[in-house]
Length: 397
Image 1 (cartoon, helix red, strand yellow):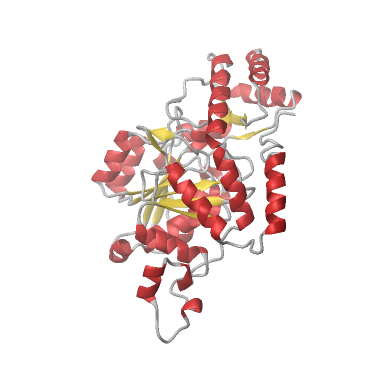
Image 2 (cartoon, helix red, strand yellow):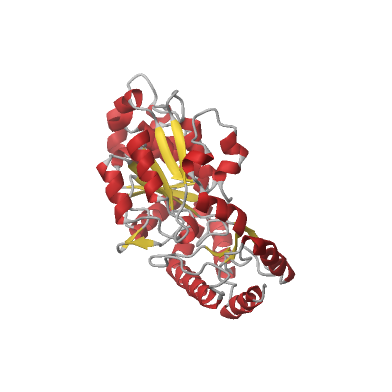
């Protein structure tokens, strides 16, 4: 059985260390080990601040909330509509916090079509939304490990004062212009779910270089409690009338993670670069052995940190045969991300403005929705596995 996720994401050595950690440590809720993991992650990524939370989805929620709460935007939020763009092919919890934050009559979310070469936003359509519809936030997802950035996109957003948020939950270690994705926008998110490049079982990270956003993230993660802030900032906001240990200075949630998960994260981080190297090696074998007459193989691979292996058929009538062959070979497969979100009730049932299919012209997103599945890429996948499957898929007539 070739599974989407490995059963061996956590080694026996790591399990033994975690067992010893539980037996020795008095405190397992958020503490010094969480902080150590955050610091090591910031160093690896190349950012100033990281905040460890209980999932990548929670990371998205906190980042959207924190960016909208940024003091520099406060006045503008009353004057300008809250207008967002994201790719039509992404995960539900990328757009969910955006939808939850739409409040005004002119607030909206625009879902762009995608480039089939790297699943990035269709730039002509994105520019049209920015110039003509006043988009001021772009939640950019680096799908399947492809860096979705381009200099043209960065220049476009800078010219029109569009804030970029990066969803890197499937793209740990992907790069653009020599920098890791997650360091280009006002903030970024990562997931450490069991099937991703590294795991804390469940977990996520929010990253930023903006100190104000960092402080807001700390508050949002833990009830809005003053005591979560760094000492100097905490002192500035203390009130004589309220116990500083139990002073709520902000709205907030409880999205903290634990010392145990952080301990695992620290161990897994040591092997992350090796994991990325293996994934990219398998991806290259996959592309080199797929039949280019029947499947898309000319993806933009520069800077990629492959998450999974996409099978995008050129003949839409062959997708059923692809699924049948994969099932027969016991290769687990699934739709590519979630297909086109425009077809999901999550989007269709929204009361806030979302442009129609005709306006968005989701040709490529529709093709992914109909004609693409993906299979897993992880430490258990071998070159021989890939060659065997590619050979069987090439025999489809």
